[in-house]
Image 1 (cartoon, rainbow over the protein chains, first blue to last red):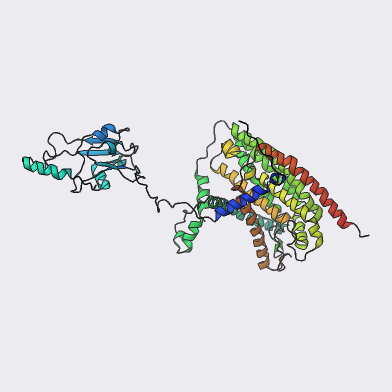
Image 2: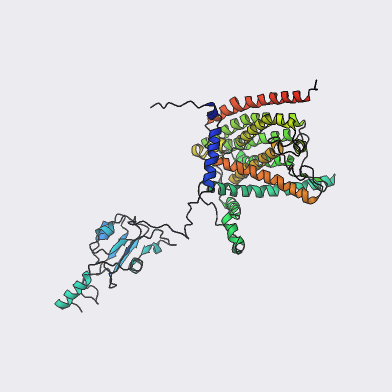
Length: 177
Length: 372
């Protein structure tokens, strides 16, 4: 395509309009309110639906919601999640009511914050929260274990109290220790 | 004789040290001004351990970034000084020094004040001051060309070539723009240029005079034109932004200093800002009255120490305003294209400067002609 260039007038060819315009624009910006955010002191408001670090959550009774089904481990594209299932006996204090992971590790250096784990989880036990600047001094520290993930994740208040129902059933059947 | 040498040495130290400090702070001002123009706040974190804790004034200084130049300088010194395998070693080491020295040498003839006691506030009061300055300034190009050649790779080479063409072209315009000044003053000594301006008003602004005379207004259009050409040529000579083709980061990586690191790069940096200060000082002396102000008798050489210091302060204030102008312009306009640069230099400024010389000569001739 050939762009037809308009001929500049003599006044424009003196560069003076451009010079004056430049002075005006820069002067205006010089006194304008600054947009810099003083980062470590102020932080930006994370928008709704932001995909930050994935953490495990507890139900309102304070019990881990994860049942160690390992779907998240399976779906995780960078293989950042490692779930150690409890094995056949289960946790002694709750008997056979529901399984819970013996260990749950997320390597935050590998995690790509895609949210597949949250999407695939049948128990709604893992959520991508709003934390974004995860730091540590060693690689080992960046592997978050179950305690840390639960502590960071906090309690998830949902309406369905599945655990209460299950516990009642267990008492009925006489399998709760 | 011994006294002259001693006082000269003292003056050299008293000029070079503040000059280097000014260079460091010019970089800070550059960063701050650029930040403000781009709606940012600029460096506001660096603090010395104790000074930052002084109530009120300490945090203010930190926010101003007063200590940033210290950090910047330390960074330059402590970084790895890497010399690539393919460079021409001798020239590679020589170029930064050659780029830096001319701008420091120019300062020698600048009168930065009238006098303190019996001492003239100029390192060397040469009677060919301006010729010396132009001689030295044109050496500045060697540092850049040598850096481009020594680096032995394509981008620095292109930067060096551009720089040589650009600086030679604009030096002609610059030299010619100054000729009317000396035709009017009738002397090449910079102190006499200032003395003339103290009498007849600044060459760029004749109303800055103790008594207005019609004569200086006759010359105003021509001196103003000289001033304009000199300013533009000064931008080209110091490789500042509308004409920073030797460096042009966007096309030539870093231009002539692509291969340089650490303090060697720092020397180019220092040289660029020192050149800016030198050329601003030249502008202040040639067109803006040097250390004079037309009021309160400040246009006469100082009799007391206090007034002497005040006149040095006046000169520094003019210098700082010009530096601010240089920095401001950098964040205002995009770079010229190479052909536009050459077009502007050879086809516009040189003819205009030549015509200006002739026109000034005619006016001076009419003025000096005996009234019939």
